[in-house]
Length: 96
Image (tube, rainbow, N blue to C red; front, top):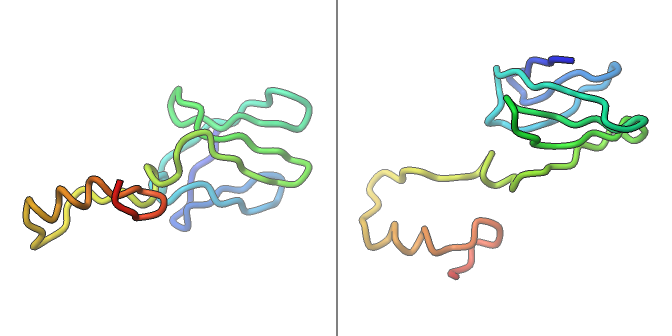
């Protein structure tokens, strides 16, 4: 089953609107039932999440901060300060 991601980063499944990821807006995902009521969600050939239709919970199989919160360029940021940004934990923001 193929679903298109809306501008709100959601898709419809059994009359429910489920959030997936901002980075997938306007793309298509594939859903494949792998167990009774459990679906694998793919982007291209990459498994990105699973969906349990009993509680409509989407569980990420990739690091969510890589999809939604990565920063590749900060205007006015010097090399020295960008180096300190790259050493920060993407989850906690603490220097690592």
